[in-house]
Amino acid sequence: MARYISKSLWLMTFAVIICCIIYPLALWAVGQTLFPFEANGSMLMGPDGKPVGSRMIAQPFTKDEYFQPRPSAASYDGSASSSSALAASNYMLRNRVAQQLGPIVKYKTGPKAGQLVAPDIEAWFQHDSFGGQPHIVAQWADAHNAVAQAWVAADPTHDKYIQDWGKTHTKEVQQFIKDNPGTPEPKSADLAMVFFESFSKENPGRFPSAVQHQTKDGKTETVIEPVKDGSDIQSNFFDMWRQDHADVELQDVPGDMVTTSGSGLDPNISLENAEYQLDRVSAAWAKDTKKDQGQVRTEIEQILQADVSAPFYGLVGEKMVNVLEVNLELRKHFGAPPA
Image (cartoon, rainbow, N blue to C red; front, side, top):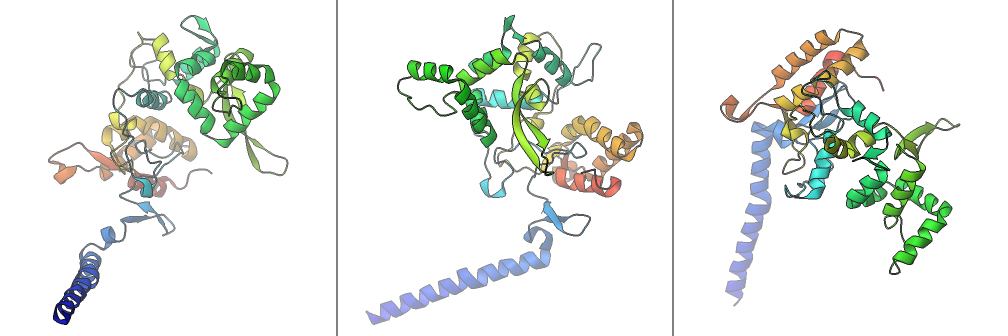
């Protein structure tokens, strides 16, 4: 019996030494010797020599001077890699794509060919009419019930805004409780539909949106106010605007501008996607550098072409651009954008 136990212990010891020590050390040595860049996370350095991100993981960019990556179902969190897992028939997928299209889609034909649709969405929204009926925000909430409730939960300021609304609209809250006896103490999300219906009547052609103000002590404060324009209106009401303007021809948008990747962290975008963003990026840099936009656009196109790549040295697949790399090149070429 002791002999069998001894052999088992020796076998376990050898397995631990090989699998837990020798094998990891061999992989580490090979990685650090032959592939040091990849083995250390494919980190890219900024102008100050400090790491700014991994070449293999997408990260968000908000300034107009930079190219933006694909949407991310993981909110660009490397520890939460995932797809949206939404089917093509899923309502929430349609809504998300419509929200992303609103601020970027352009006219294809007509006197405004090549111009953004966004300003016309705002002007149409301000008329407070959809399908010939008034109270557009109430109609939006009724048609997009889940989205309206998600708006409430999206930010603590939204929740507080509805709580404050409830204190001044006790009649509406009591009526909700009467109509829904199973919810005697409704939360903000429960009151979403009632809130938007009331808000729409009291603020025609307006939508509750986050607005930043500077306080007396120099700090920035975010509050919810009725607004008539901005990205929230362009995003949330594009789908309804499109239904009211079904005969208008719009430019096709590259698919990877409005769809997430399987990981939610794809660091690359198609060259077509980058070229679609080129007008916005070049206009922002032209404004910052006080240069002609045509000249700036040409310079950025050259940067894109220098960074473009395709699988198997271009033999298969479409041309891709690494967002972080090209944005670092823009920073190197033009300097830092204004804060």
